[in-house]
Image: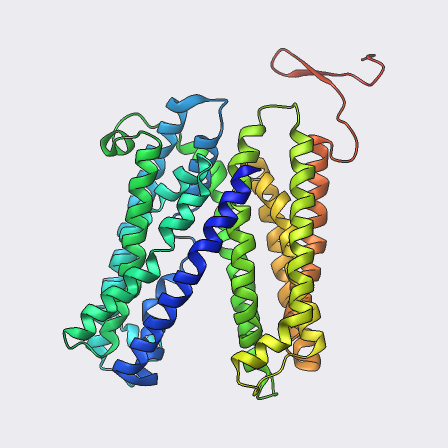
Amino acid sequence: MKSLGSSFLARLLSFPLTALATFLSTSLFIRVGGPEVYGGVALVGGVFLLFPFSDLGTGAAVVNAVAGSMHGRRHALRVIRSAFRWVFVSAICFTLIGWAGASIFSWRNILSLGHFPASDVDHTVAVCMTLFAATIPLSLGQRILLGLGRNDLVLYSLSTSSLFTLAIAWLLSSGGTSGIELAVSIPAGVLLSQLICFVLGLHTYALPLGLAIFGETGEHREIMRTAAPMLVLLIALPAAIQGQRLIVSWSDVPTALAVYGLAMQIYSPIWSFIAATSGALWPMFAKNRSHSAGKAQVVRQSLAIFFGVGAFAGAGTILFGDAVASLISHGTIHLSVSVVISMGFMLFVQAVQQVPGMYLTDSRGLAFQSLCVVVMTIANLALSVTYTPIYGPWVPFAATALSVMAFQVIPGVARVNTEVGLLTPRRGRLRIGRHHRLEMNRSGKP
C-alpha cells in the first residue's frame, strides 16, 4: 500500500504548481491574443484529446508484462519491443492525418474556426498533430514506470507539461507570435514531459534504448488479447463524458451548460487525485495475480481505502460544492442541491470502481470490463438524453453514478470475488494434465 501513499503525495505536491502554470498560460494567451485567440488556441492545442486511444491499447500489455513476475524480464522485453512497433505505426498514421488537413481537406472547416486564416489553422493543427504523434512511442515510458510500481515518478514527470507549455508560450509571444500559432506550445509541453518520463522509464528498468526497440519480439498475439479490449475502454469512457456535455448543450435552459461546466470544473481536480492515486493499484494487483496467498486481503484493503476516499470526496463535494462554485463564478452561478448530491454520489461510485477496474486488467479481465463499459455507456447516454431536458444538468451526474454502479461496480466486484474469494474462500483446485481439472471441495473429496 506504500505506492498508494507515494502516488497521492506526488499528486498533492505537483498539483499547485500545475494549476498555477495553467492559470498563467491561460492569462498569457488572453493577454497576447484576446479571448477569441484563446478559444482557438485551447481547441487546436488540445485537438489530441480527441484521440485517447492513440497507443491502440498496447500500454496495458506493457504494464502487465513489466509488473508480472511469472514470465520474467525476457518476456517483458519482447512485449515492449512489440508494443513499440505498434505505436510507431500509430504515430505515422496520426502524422499523416495531421498534414492531410493542410493539403487534402481543411482543419479550419472541421473545427469551425472560420474567423482565422485557413493556412494558419491548417498548418498549426498539422504541427500540433506531429508533436502529438511523437509522444505516442514515448508514452510507453510511463507504462514501464507504472509496471514497476513507480506511479509517483509518472505523476512528477507529467506534471512538468504545464511548465513547459508556459515557457514555450512565453518564448513564442516574446518573438511576436500572437495568433493561433501559440497552440503549438500545448503539445510541445506534453512532448517534453513524456520525454522525461520515457528516459526515467528506461533508466529505472535498466533498459538501453536500442535493446527496447530492436531484438526479439513474438508477443503480438498476447498484445492483441490485451490491447483490443483496452482500446474499447479508451474509446467508450471518454465518449460517455463528452456525449453528456453535448446532451446538456441541447437543453432549452440557457444556464444549463454553464452550471454543468462549472460543476465539472470542481469535479475534475478532485477526480484527478483519485484517478492518479489509483494507478498504483494496477502493478500491485498484477504482481499479486500469480501469488494466491494474501491476494484477497490486498483487494479487501484496497476496497476499504477507496470506499473511504470516495465517501470523503463525495461528502466534501455535497457540503462545499455550491460555496466553491459561487466563489469561482463571483456569485453568478449556483449549484443546486440535486447537482452537488449527484456529483458527490458519482465521485463515490467512481472511487470504489477503481479497485475492480484496476484488478481486472489481465486479458480476460479487460475483455469482461469492455463489455461492461459498453453497456454502461449506452445506459448512461440513454438516461441522460431522456431525462436531462426534463430535470436539468444534475441528470448526467446521477446517470453516470447509477450506470457505473449497476454495470461496472457490481459486476466487477462479483467477478473479482469469483477469482480471489472476497466474500467466501475459494475451493482448492488441483490441475491434472493439460485438459483435465479435478475440483476439490472443503472435505477434500473430488
